Image (cartoon, rainbow, N blue to C red; front, side):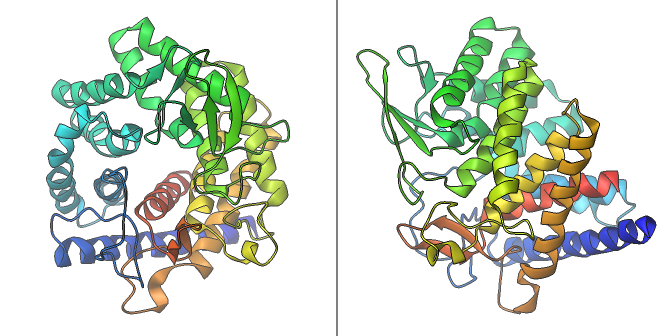
Length: 376
């Protein structure tokens, strides 16, 4: 019975991976050189606003994962995906000096870091290091946090998914200042944005003169004291990454607390509402991108926890989320749909990318699939 379940999961996940490859190939054939963010009516090309270019690394990131998947499973196209990944990664190099965004981890970990893992060219690693140094310049000594793109006094939970690139630069260079910045940012986020029940605030506001924490806030959640689902998923994954670099047990404990909150408040099938505390009618809108990120977080945490029983539970939770996404939320039922995963939410309050596909949703869905297929 167990073997049948594993075989069924493998077939389901492989089918979803092939569909993802097909959709990405369709995108780059139809819109060469284009780095989309989210769909409108199922189409990647539209005039909707994006504010900052934090998603540019996700498309080449999927290509690097396809290359490894094809190579590991005897596929026919690893060289095709290698070439395309290089073509879409190389133009991002100039972004290593981009001071306008807090998402350089999204951009460079997905692209140049994965390229470096393949070719081991020191020049590629140096680009990742420089991106980490650039992100570290956002650090506020008063308050001990990396500021968001919104304002000097603003800390976002999203930055936990980017602080890993500062940790990486610190480890690669032996720079203790960078390591201290990454550690202090993680500790500050843990103290002020993660609540006692494991839920998370989207944003924290600080006094620039004293560094004092003033209040919770939100840009994309239902309200300041609610738990925006994608932010919770960022925290799960991000604190697990901080633990991997620092081995500070507080970060692993925090990631586990966030994961426990997700398990308790998500739907029985593992998918979550866009905000866990939104009114009942609004909670009918799920966010599959948050679920995909959470699946990555659960699979990652499953091998980090010291309790093997809970680690197994987290593994099964991640797999359950993936099963649901593959079975109920792919765009394979609509011929004109250009994304991979339907039901993502970009900005609920502004009505942007609601019930659509998103680059981050598709990217972390593919990452979770690849992770699962390597261990099944």
